[in-house]
Image 1 (cartoon, rainbow, N blue to C red):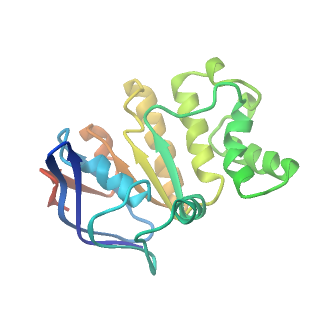
Image 2 (cartoon, rainbow, N blue to C red):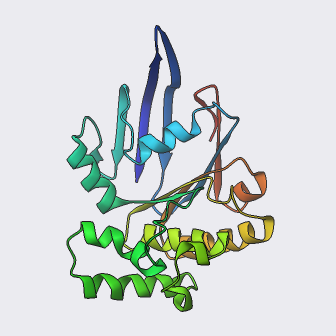
Length: 221
């Protein structure tokens, strides 16, 4: 499903070059639920950004299914993301002036679906995450856990092949975090491939496999 071979990534900070990923090789099978752990600065978020085609790598190869992901234009990268990848972030990234339903429907707007169809599909996914009754609420009227569930519904609405989650429980209390992981487990059981970055061992223990990163390398997979 996902294959990384000898991925390297550096950033330049003035005259200094920071080597963030060093010969990272990793495979994720279709339907796996994988967590990525590591200290701050270990490269885990950079790795997730490359997997999500939000950032390019310097050398190596990245295959998503049979597709080689490399040197894409901004437009092609956006199309790949919209078609194949769902994202969930720690900060939710919901639009405050749009309702829960409108936030979930937004990716379908970029796919060109008519409004009625967008809203119908969005309503189905809100129901799937247990928020059918909150469809017309603004983010400010929702709890943190509810906002993250809206974000999960939005990530699923395009039926992606892979769901990428960057510290999705980081802004939630322990009970709400556990409920969110229950939701991820339910989604995973339906066959979706999930890759989740976390610093919480209790969260990683809920996944099938944990990849540990240290100093830009995969220390254990």
